[in-house]
Image (cartoon, rainbow, N blue to C red; front, side):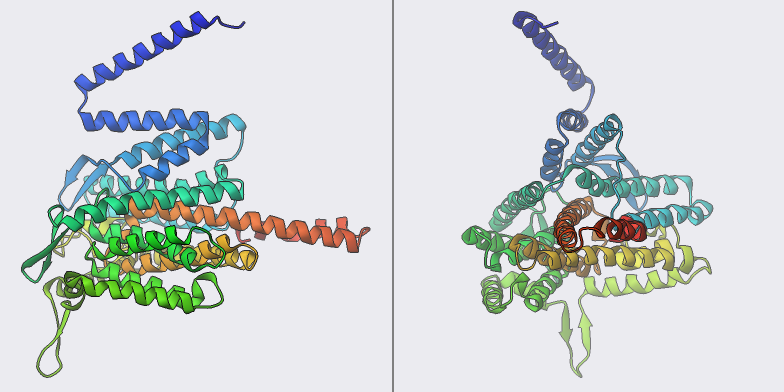
Length: 500
């Protein structure tokens, strides 16, 4: 039965009245921050129910920014939930609902499935020694952070299910770059004033201030920038990518953003990104344009004396050629030595670790973390967990290089994206030597999002290549092509499902 326009208007007006009434009641009873998160998650769920792609767009712009709410505080750690969590949880609920309605598995097969499953399994087993040696509230806090890690890994599977075409993948890459640019403009403009943000010290003197909007620290913000800086730089020097002026401006903006974090780990990551792209040529055959671009960017450093001082005061050479580290660097070296002592403290620690996220509660160093992601994984999940993490990174780089091989020379976007993403991930990993950046949602979210786009584009290129090969075989051997095709499919079924 078709409803009359007047009846539709009455239903809409009544629904809006009820919604605004509920919001008004919640506003009176619930703190504004909690209400904001609740409405954000609800809005994302409703949007995802209409179309999952729109929910992903909301997630792209929510990942760099977060309104944090403190849920629990214990000695050594604070557990918070942010607006990005609310948006992601709403998207996950909408995604699972769609998968249930369509009767489709929410976890499509991909080469990263086994490493991800192995990492999650190892992290789960690492809670056994933690439960035997730590207090219950420690187990609860670490379990909550483990759940958050899984929550952001689900981004990878959502993107694999939603993005099915090359046009979609390119659109999401562009939207991710726009989201990064918005954050960089806010950070650079506020930091350049010198009035806002946290103090940056050279020795005991405050030399500058840095603003880190939406992120936990300047090192995490720098890692977020490095992930996209590699992509932008690679596209800037690619010959057949349009809008060169826009990419050059974006490159300068992100370069300033990294410099204004005043994080020495970020500077090392930046050097790693530039080195990788110089060696690879940024996805193009000639490296000359990129070398000129590097010289131009490095020349900007000389106009920022505070950045130069921040770079150079870490190590000083005393009389007799003795190297002396400044206090912050010295403390990090001391923390790493203590972390290794913890790693060897019990016979079981090197094998299964002390528990995921458990390094915060050891009480053997002044910092909350070991300030090294690799040492953290090593002592928290043991040699087995660390080896699985290395396997996961290996598969990620393997898929990225496969996209590059499938894209050259016909697809400049795919080749530039793959090489730039690989350089950005290497920069993030270099920065992770000095901070536990891979556990931050600000890095985890974009990392898994872009990884999924890389896998999607690789799959599309691979299907196109296989279609051309099938046409060739069918034309050359019309009578045998069917049997040959079935034999290959049977032999490679397991390999294609998990490793291809």
